[in-house]
Amino acid sequence: MTRRKTPEYGFETRMVHAGAQPEPVTGARQTPIFQNTSYVFHDADDAASLFNLQSFGFIYSRLSNPTVAVLEERLASLEGGRGTTCCASGHSAQLLVFFALMEPGDRFVASNRLYGGSVTQFGKTFRKFDWHCDFVDFDDPQAIRAAIGPKTRAIFCEALANPGGVVTDLEAVAEVAREAGLPLIVDNTMATPFLCRPIEWGADIVLHSTTKFLSGNGTSMGGAMIDSGLFDWSAVAGRFPGLASAEPAYHGLNFHESFGDMALTVHGHAIGLRDLGPTMAPMNAFQTILGIESLAMRMRRHCENAMAVAEFLDGHERVAWVRYAGLPSSPYHTRGRKYLENGFGSVFTFGVKGGYEAGLKVVEGCELFSHLANIGDARSLILHPASTTHRQLTPEQRETAGAGDDVIRLSVGVETPEDLIRDLDGALVRGAA
Ligand SMILES: *Cc1c(COP(=O)(O)O)cnc(C)c1O
Image 1: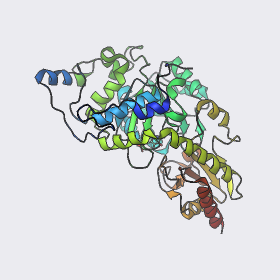
Image 2: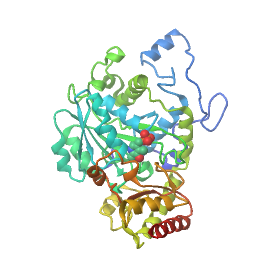
Image 3: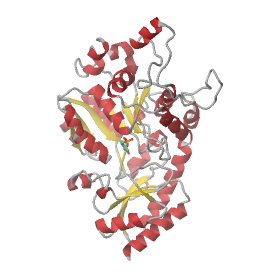
Image 4: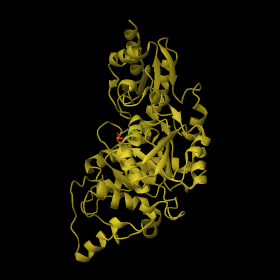
């Protein structure tokens, strides 16, 4: 299903050009870093009109900034969305989207296979706002339907789930969301728009941790909320008061009535960033813009290397199993071929024979793979989720999330694949001794 016409330019062209033009005063070709907090008004009328949201422009960098705005347009273009709100981190993107959609007492249904930090944010911290998350198995559309109640306001999943190599059946999940009149929010961090564009499969909102593959070299935290502009916030009266009722924090403005398909994007800036404050730094937007210029080339290489490493591990005597959607043995291989366009991603897990202790030894025995908690870096990374990122979860939650005791997670970088294989082989063999 294609819900939006293919834009005029190809992906790689938009990756380099979308949202940017030479800076009009100096002619600077690359997007400058506007490292400043505030912008001079033309006159008092201009100021009033900006503050009333009657015209758009720059007021104060907590709300918007010219460097960040280029990144916002670029991401909207790459995902096929209408508008983007960039913010300080992937987690703050999740905060912004639910802040727009939820009232105290409201709920949302999320996949039980999510990034560990999201499980904690949704299951524990969001409760302080009286927001509640029902986690279910998204491989079972009936389970999603069954979890939807009168207070449910959204459906949330990852396109390619971290870290279990799980590919979500986006069309099936979007169908459930449509039947229920709820927006589908998809975290597309692991796939990036080069591998998957969830809006084309029925998602309404796409989120990113730009910290990962989009910036691509482990320098800059960032997040993004990209709205398709296709969801009708006014369809059921009173369901989404933040977007489609009089907003008391903006002298009674109704965002959907006033801004149409830009309602969520304007809300993200004018309420979300204004009142919660998780703004993306201009320097980080700049680094992310540079990263995106090479996204397609990097992702191709990431995926090729990941495939080579996965095949090597799959045949290794010290490895119990490999979970990578690129391997034909993966239960998600067929789905991956449908939803992932240019490869199966670079993050996957494998199990070392010998469990927790053996897993830790392999992680510590690598020289080229860095032992750290990140993914999507040009460098190869290795992690033992049970003792780190998924430590806060219960053993049952860890198993469900694909982060049991023997599990090792790799984020395969863009180095020479033979070097990566030699490094892992050495660590596996030494770990056995
Ligand atoms: C890292 C990550 C997040 C959180 O993003 P931050 O930028 O670290 O806040 C959310 N979802 C996924 C899939 C991630 O990998």
